[in-house]
Structure formats: C-alpha cells, structure tokens
Image (cartoon, rainbow, N blue to C red; front, side, top):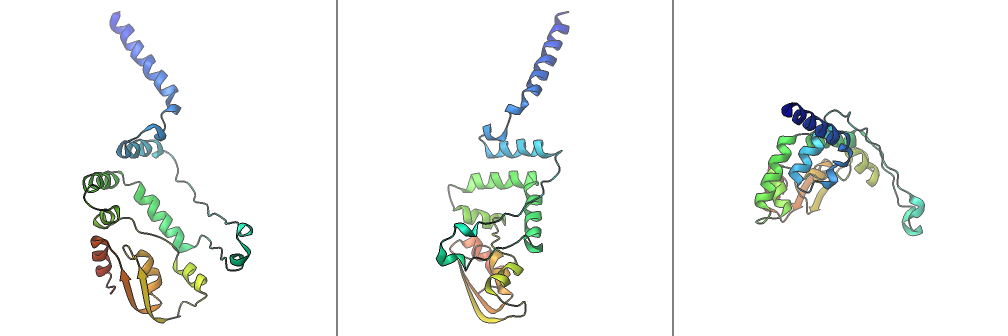
Length: 186
C-alpha cells in the first residue's frame, strides 16, 4: 500500500511539473550549453520558422542621406545564407563542441581567433545581387584592385572579389589570416 501511494505521488508530481512547464523557458537557463540542449529539445517537434524580410523606414533618415538609401530585398543569396545558418544552428553536437572549445580557449585568445580555428563566424553583409545593386554595376563589371580591411574569414570579400582582378586583405587574427591565405587573397 505504501508503495502504491508513493508511485501515485511521484506520478502526480511529474504531472504537476509537466503542467507548469511553461515556466521552464530558456531565459532562466544560464549555461550556454544547457540552454542549447534545452532549446534544441523544445524545437525538435516545431516546424522551422519562415524567415520574413524586414523593411527599413527611410522617412526616419535625415534629408542628406534619404536620397542615398537603397532598400535590399530577400534574394536567393540571402535566402541560401539564412537556410545554411538555420541548418547549422540545429547541429547540436557541433554546437556543443564549439562551446567547449570556446570555453577552453577564451582566456587565451580572442573570440575572432577562436572562430577562425573552428571555421565559424562568417559574416554576411550582402549577396552578389545586393552588392551589384548597391554599386549600380552589372555582373560583368570589372576593376583592378580591391582592399578589404578586417576581412575576417573572407566571406564578404568573396562576394566582392568576383569583380576585381587583384584582391588584397588585412586581418589581425592569425587563424583568420590562414583562412584568407587558403582563399588565395594577397
């Protein structure tokens, strides 16, 4: 009889915890590793969100820059980047590995260098189509030289490099320099 009462109490307690699980949100989890595992568990059954493009409010800009403003739109290059980012964010074991390595290396080297070691942290500023629209150039347009200051891993440089015969880059982080050398930038 005592065993039956104990089992019923445990089942009741579990049912109570499940009924108030809305309180169990990721914002109360402090550890990045625990938050990653928790958020991954919550999102396993959810359909992926549809990414919506945002609109800027050019009327809020000053008169001197309002006429220079160019609104970009969600194009195929941007969609591909977002899709890859969402996919990579779901790789739980990779994220756990990155968090572990970051925790070990962060007292020794910069976040940029850690990202360079791990092959992550690529920037996305604009797609090829957006770059061409921003500079008002055609896909065939070419120039002599490009200098990218603080090029990181070269992700943004790659978008621009298609229009230049010589590409020069600068970067402080040694691992990022190695990434740039692998891409054959000078």
